[in-house]
Length: 99
Image (cartoon, rainbow, N blue to C red; front, side):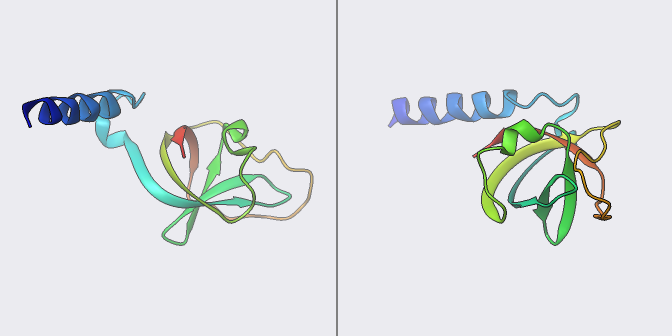
């Protein structure tokens, strides 16, 4: 039982330390939906879309895929698509981990 508790504790520390955020409260870890359209790629959480700056992290996911993602707010990123549609979003994000 002690070995199991120790293993669980180490696993928790490893997970929490894997976040690259400056402050832990800057990291969000959420169940989300990958949204892709001609403007760019987004994570949808609670009916709000967030523009993904590092789109290569979602290349292998299709539109409307359910994922669990850890991400942080990222400034200075913009649409990468090739159409003239407008897709409203809350803010830009950088995905740190996705499953």
